[in-house]
Image (cartoon, rainbow, N blue to C red; front, side, top):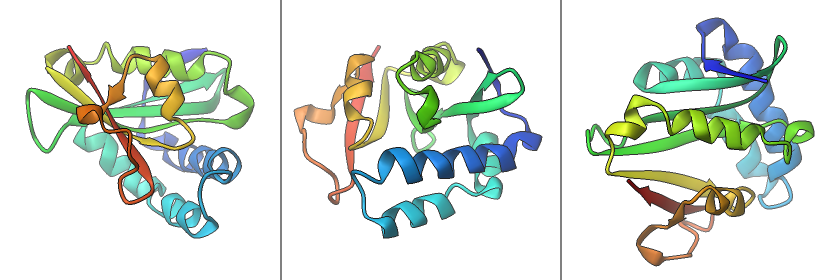
Length: 155
């Protein structure tokens, strides 16, 4: 398993990976309308733009992309960062791929310069992020708009 920086030519395959993950893994926690909107918001073009705003990584099993994650400054801050676009194909979940992605993100310069790192966590993934040391932002374990938890980690 290799974790490497995203390349523009990864965008279409990665968009498909995210769509498959959302349809299979997240559909148990979210309505189909939300899943479809989330798929649309992770198009190849959006992924390229996100990679240009921060650093995006992909997890590869041979030549196949099986997961991803991104980190960027939080609203332009140099002391806060945000983790985004973290997905692992369902067949690879529970096998350490997500952990390896988080570890790569936590070695990135955006993480290392930050005093605080935030992550908008899906209902599906919140327990995974808690195992990785993230806690509810301001101690509030409430869904924001009924969709996402806000988690954070201080360095």
